[in-house]
Amino acid sequence: MENSNFTTDQSSSQVLPAGYELDEYVIEQEIGAGGFGITYKAYDKQLDRYVAIKEYFPFNLASRDEGMHVSPKTRVAQDVDEYQWGLSRFIQEARTLALFEHPSIIRVIRYIERNSTAYIIMDFAVGRDVSEVLRRDGLLSVEQLKDILLPIAEGLAAVHSADMLHRDIKPGNIRLRDNGTAVLIDFGAARQAIGVRSQSISTILTPGYAPIEQYSTRGNQGPWTDIYALAAVGYVCLTGENLSHYEATERIRNDQLPKLVDRIKSIDTAFLHALDWALSPEESDRPQTVSEWLEVIRGGVLPTLDSSSVDDQATVRLSSPAVDESVDKRGKNSKNTNNQGEKKSFHWGMVAVTFGVVVGFVMFFMASGLDKSESDHRIVKNAPDSTVSHDEGVAENRTEPSEPDPSAVRARVVDSKPRAPAAASKDSVQDDRDFEIAKQINTTEAFEIYLRLHPDGRHREKISATRQ
Image 1 (cartoon, rainbow, N blue to C red):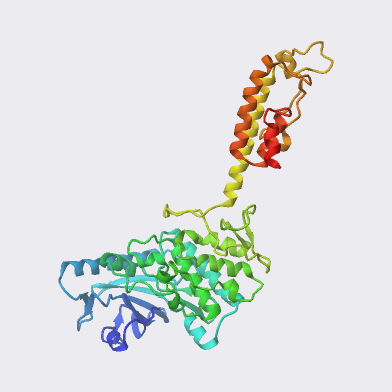
Image 2: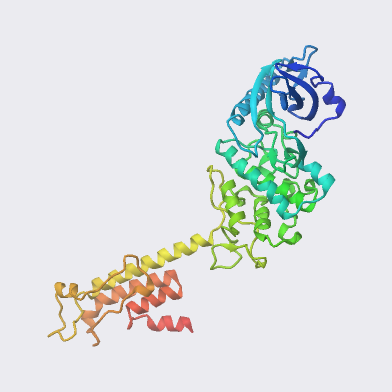
């Protein structure tokens, strides 16, 4: 339920009293209050069970009269508009959540519109929230944390598939049932809606758990926003750190948050690296979807390297406890699932693939040019003279690979006698073209391809001098 941002007197004067009946539900007590709602524990008379009821009640906009009706504090058009806008989002949130049947997402039973406001009726999760667990039982181990975070992440993936975000993941909004399972509560559609409309962010985020994009009413929010907050919960559970000291607005300029892999001794370095990755200050540097993040956690491989690390590798293997310190532990991701970022992470894997394609294309291009230029100069062993017809050239039984590769370039039988200057002019042009292409690529492989195609090339000495 929501962590209270208000004094007891301020919220208690506005809550529904114990014993108040809302259809078949009897209010027993308030169990949470925040900027945009009040949560109650209530008794279901029909089904003989307890439920949680969340009432839409934006404290900064609304008031309650003696008949328990809720209305905007003023008749100012802007206040009325904001109140109604938030209410519509609150109801839409209830409708969307009612579609989910996931054990890690609190189940919405129904919603009721009464008292000029709305109420979401949910299962009552008997247990303790994570903040209480940390306060009473102490820090969690890596394995204990995974038992909580992974199911919650799977539930989030289902929520994100419906184009919905939580926007307020924190220890107080993850509840551990008495049976040991974890459930995510208190979604924040109404909070976000009113925050955007009023251009105010002071009550729609929790410092330390909210990433940088939540500090702007036009921030680039998406699945990566919830992923950051969930990773922050993990950080607190393992370290006990007060993350309000590492607010996103400070981290984006000068990130002083120590990496978990440097603080926690565990053989499960993959999990720690994945948490550090998800806590990257820039949203484009984080995993863009929950499924991508879970794949890394379970597979132990970050998808990219920082440009300052090892050039030849496309992935970082994390399953081993010994991880090269030169590797950037923030894993970067070039995907942008919602067309959101102008910033793209640098992919060495893509560079390697591109280079291979370019080299292959150049080799094929040069080989094709050589074939064409030498088609009239090939001789077949024991042939009566050095002129070979087109048909004889085909009968040479030369096999070209479907995809060019430097190792697949076959040696060609060429005239071993020095060519006359007049006959060499055409080859010289091709020789120069191939050398220019190799020089533009400027790699050992490119020059080796040139030398294979032109064993007596005009530029052979230049390549030798360069290598020395």
